[in-house]
Length: 233
Image (cartoon, rainbow, N blue to C red; front, side, top):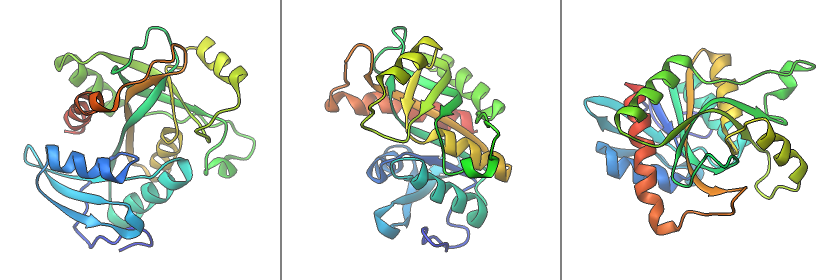
């Protein structure tokens, strides 16, 4: 057990998928894993471990935002031996070439700040994905014929953004999408020698104003999870 994860030794796999929503973790476990069992429910943050294609996999919620994800990523790696962490979640598109339902594979994650920022002092650290995971995810998406974009994203500190000027500059500089967790995941994984990747479904669009209806989200999220699982193994 750790401070925020009530699992026992051996309950958590070396490969962990991390959706933000704990109930999405349950949906992933129920939909994709065999013999899935709940291994954590401390503070309502659900985690499940089961089998996918003969491989042990854990799906564990991260909560919203980088401070919350940082807690779980640190404990999963440090206290339970997780070696591969893949964020699966939604994002907002920031380029006209990106469409609703497309999948984004995040090569880099720009940010104004993360919980790890104080470590680097004056250094502007550039959080990036694990290359082998990224390459495997891109290959899996191509084989599954999933509409995919690979490139930089933005990890925001806030959901209700008041910086249209910043959004304009990110769009201008090719940032594909915005979400709230990947930059800290990449930083924590690098610090502890683990592999990390963020695979995201575009659920809304900051430029066009489009949004994915709730009834259509499940099918789109299936594509993202299939890419993530294929990439991990």
